[in-house]
Length: 346
Image 1 (cartoon, rainbow, N blue to C red):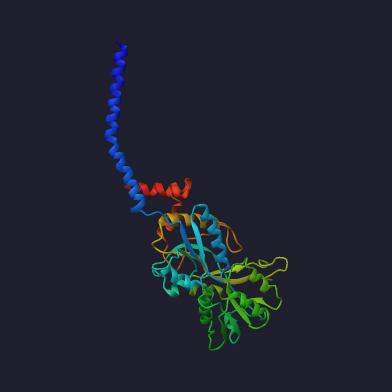
Image 2 (tube, rainbow, N blue to C red):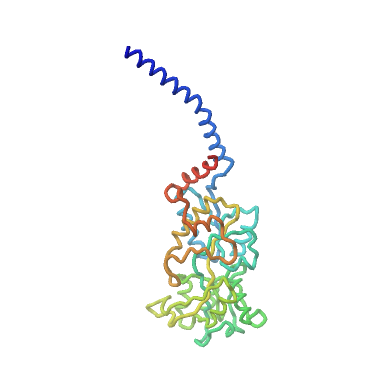
């Protein structure tokens, strides 16, 4: 009797299971098909190969691009570093619908002169001070004092060239009353050292070996801009900074006093069509790379949402406000991306 009851229960259980499978199987297959369809077509996957544009005369841009490259390769993304002719070339590449450039380093303020178009910013990365070095006496404290001199202003198409012309023009210095030489920083440094020019303007980081090399010569001075605050008011993308005495070489006390400088920020920009998941990944990386203190800022100042040229990308804005999405915090990039993309069908 008990055996017969047990057999009937088993038969009933099997029948129920078969009925459940029969009912759930089509739904399960539809959900799986929908997830596959979403994964393949509705929300395309992030690219596995990207291009970052730097600049042939920008060692800092190239150095940081290589650091990004290492981080992105760990996430399964191949990075090509494109060494352009400068900031203007980078802007044009991003604005070109046929270009394959995904991200580019651009000096803040340059895109305004070229027209930012649909470019979007991921924020500011670090200060890039304007260094004005000359064979002159200590009384030179304004750019206008260089009128009539031979001045290197950076290579054509580079952010240094654009900014140097703006600063000089505001100070009354033009090609009509002075000799303005458009050459890159390395050539300018050699010419200043060998007395072939009188002054040079370069945008570079305080850790630059080129800056240290030029200022190691006793006859070359770093000009302190007494009117630095005025420049920062006239040009909103400039910051008024103070380089502390001895910050370049504390052993040789270079500079021998506090020096007033102006500085734009280095920014990284992208197209409005860049995949949102890739934006979050880039934000995660730049927050790790640029979150360190320097002689001009404390830890945590950069990266910053401030950028005067291009509107802040929506995902970048969310990152600055709330940090990474929950999945990106705890899961590998491609797993969190798969889950996020599949979730749109639920």
